[in-house]
Image 1 (cartoon, one colour):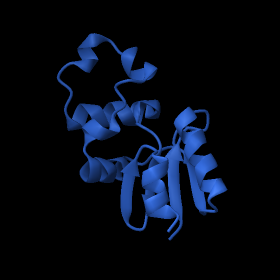
Image 2 (cartoon, one colour):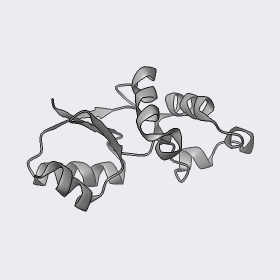
Image 3 (cartoon, one colour):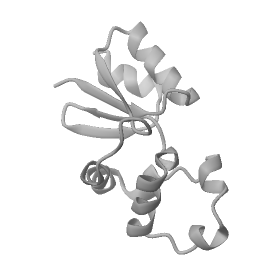
Image 4 (cartoon, helix red, strand yellow):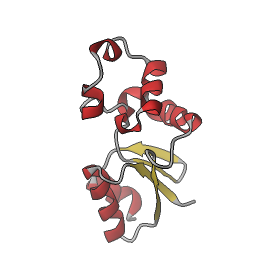
Length: 116
């Protein structure tokens, strides 16, 4: 099964992650969830595995620009709707590999996980 890296190509963290994978010869397929879309069922799988709190990027400009009324009282349903409507609110990159899903990039963690 090929690793799939989900993200947005102009995201600095996604760029670092892709560079790391290329430098370490790790095969992957890139999925731009802004351009290629994101199925609700796939996002729900990530939420089930990681929790919506870990996936929702509250530090990003897209989230910060939301009206306060939308930021208050978030739960799994409203967070999922926000992430489907504006995929830039998903913390990046999301990686599906070997039946597991993870979010974010850490060279040390990835070395242990993918470069073995």
